[in-house]
Image 1: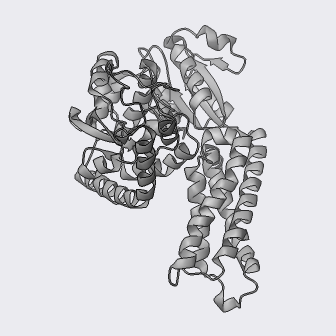
Image 2: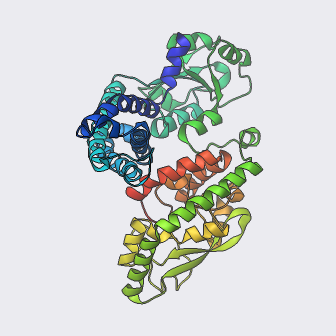
Image 3: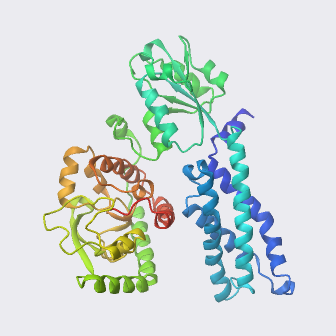
Length: 468
């Protein structure tokens, strides 16, 4: 029973919300669709496949809109406001095959189904979130973590978990042993921090707080009571090393606290032939489809750029991709023709060199669409670290450790850093983006690429900055 309760607490609030919505929709959508199509004979009403497409499309757009991310779960107004948008986009996507494709996808009354789905999915989405928010307020999904150590590293772990951790709440207890160094003064002053000193083992503390996880984070490793840690493991408590736990919880490789020995022996940075083949296939398929679908947008944007100042439509610039190779990236021109007459400079938010048309194109990301050609040529991938200019690569590599490791994969049109960090216009921004890029390279998989592609919709609809 204790194991079952622990696994339920380890379930993230986002996953719980997804399962809750799925269950509610499975119960409410079939009778609601029957009611909406009650004017049709039962034999002509929508079958299970078109109805399933409506549910799947809504959940897809809810995920793409970031409705299961930690920040959406912590900000009620933002979360509730985006539900109807996801419901509308999902219903629209599902209504198209229901209207135009043959059986078993076809469904009569697709317009009526669209309206019914928009209303029902919005109501279900709101209800599920109101219920989840009530559960969160009552302490649900709060994990209980026992941190071995109470020094500087333990304090930094708690700080990062509170600010960036994927869990909506954690109850952290710090176990201090004399062999592990001094207690950090910030922990002693922190009213939320509970520090328990012990000269014996840690199992008793883990049992007392009913710990879900044990994290080893001492400042001083020499003299660490290994038998006491092993006792936690053999008693059924998952034991994690500091770096591994931190990477998993914040979704990036924290460069400030990076232990190179951990990075050397940790899993990751492996690319099998099958992985590379599937990634290239995904690049070609997605880029071809998007290029075909966005041709009208590209034509309209090209016309607007030409009419604005009569200058060139495309902008070509040297960028760095896999293995440090330099290629010419293609973008729709968004700056004045003399924007770099004095040489390469960092882009900035509100850059005065950007034209009025260019500002709009950047906001909706249309200026990036010509890079689909770079992807088809093999210079870029759809997902990967954003390509930087050679001048800046040399400068950043000299100041940031592991910067060149981001070139283990092709540069990307979108990436893990792009959906988690708004834009980079300084050395500190470059360091933050690098921590996400290294996480992506270390944990690369085709499924990870697919999830990033889906989440890119959130960045397009609600951009946190358009400077790249």
